[in-house]
Amino acid sequence: MEFKNLDSCTSFAKLRNQEPCSVKDMLTKERIQAFSILEGGGLTYNYAAMPVTEATIQTLQELSNEQQLIEKYIALLNGETMNTGENRLVLHQLTRGQILNPVFADNEDKGKFYQGQLEKIKEFSSKVRKGEITGSTGKPFSTVVQIGIGGSDLGPRALYLALKGSQDEKQLAAKFISNVDPDDAADVISGLDFETTLFILVSKSGTTLETLTNRDLVIEAIKASGIKGIDPSRHIVAVTSKTSPLASSDTVLDAFFIDDYIGGRYSSTSAVGGVLLSLAFGYETFAELLQGAHEADKMALENDITKNAALMDALIGVYLRNVLALPTTAILPYSQGLNRFPAHLQQVDMESNGKHVNRSGEKVSYATGPVIFGESGTNGQHSFYQLLHQGTDTVALQFIGFSESQYGKDIVVEGSTSQKKLNANLAAQIVAFARGKDDKNPNKQFEGNRYSSLLTARTLNARTLGALLAHYENKVMFQGFAWNLNSFDQEGVQLGKILAKKVLEGCKDDPILKAYADLL
Ligand SMILES: O=P(O)(O)OC[C@H]1O[C@](O)(CO)[C@@H](O)[C@@H]1O
Image 1 (spheres, helix red, strand yellow):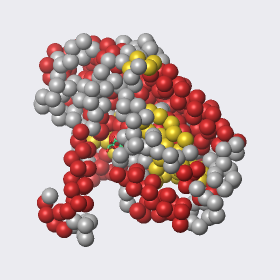
Image 2 (spheres, protein in one colour; image 1 turned 30 degrees about the vertical axis):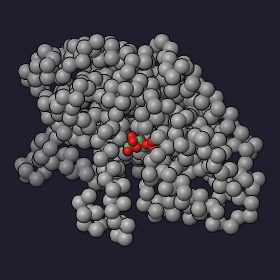
Image 3 (tube, helix red, strand yellow; image 1 turned 135 degrees about the vertical axis):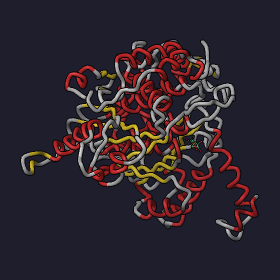
Image 4 (tube, rainbow, N blue to C red; image 1 turned 120 degrees about the vertical axis):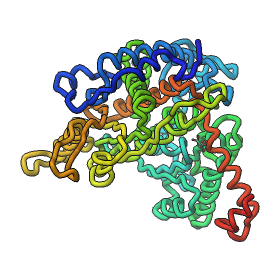
């Protein structure tokens, strides 16, 4: 396997020399039908409104071959040390099922290790939901609160919110505490009945300042509640690595494990998301999510880019970033359930590919990961779409949509349901962005040729959600390979943490200022 920079690829040079096309006149019914890829898990990726021709696609295929994107994915699945910066394997796909060979590390079959944790989650969540495991005063648990930050919060939170509307059966309510701002914890705690609340303390490292601080805050609040006989340790479970300080703690009811080979932002399908989602919705729902992700992971092995949605999305993204020089990508789900999904993808994408050096530590001379932001539609339309339509920058747009609503509680008003109105808006936006509109008044002129893709499924459920999650994780992985980055470490977040500690030590009286702790 060869690791080389994007700008040393002959296929990339060829791509740059091709005449860019405009989607203004290209968006036709035939193209919408043809430029579509079925992904596993009930998901379809459509790239009809992306500025690519058959010639572009052919060259993107050559780029995929030249950068050995599928070979690198296979190597990752087979347990090669792809996270070179931290000298670690990258095994998050294995948390949803084995695709290729068994992977052995730390003297164990890692697939079996993740499976073992799943079994444990299944049993524990079932007992809690049946009331066989109760709080310390004997009452069944009715609420779970996840305490964690970054990957230990964003993914599980986004997935929980996405599935909240898709279940008929009894759910345990979930809440989240992440920020070290004490108001975050205070706000959540103020609405809790501690006797029926189970806290899930999630930190892979077991050392994250925010999470440990919030744990202590919660323990103090439980103790201060004055509830007779309440024991905080019977109201907390830990999700962490076996070697972390939390694992040996006797202050938790139970512990579930992940390992160093699951990056925080890729950990939603491990115990990090599994404990919460299984408690909230039942283990079967979490298993369906894993199944959807596993199906998409398998599809991502396809060499032909016209049959591999994540790979096609990744390569078009590289084209937009490195040939058309677009710095920003907007994630636009037309689904209220996905309203925190863009926030999760910000971490997945920007923490993975926000890098300026390649795998060998050499500075690269081309753009890498884009800025990611997003908001659910139609809310976003009444906020930032003005810039998307008429601003001076072209932003790459990624729409997500579903034929049916989750709750199914909808009425016909003026001849159409709300779901129809929602999807009519989605479709209208794609056309408006692509085609634009001429007007004599420059203020009302829409230039068009603004590019978008569309991920769709019948409805947002555990399976389609799992596929959606895997789609983006795999897209980011392929882009990292194309850019010759290590997408699996995050050194860029360390400096601020270290300096914050110094500031704390240097300004006990005035924690915010003291001239930035006398500039350290
Ligand atoms: O699970 P932990 O170890 O508390 O880490 C939380 C988050 O902190 C980070 O290291 C970044 O600060 C993320 O990558 C990670 O998801």
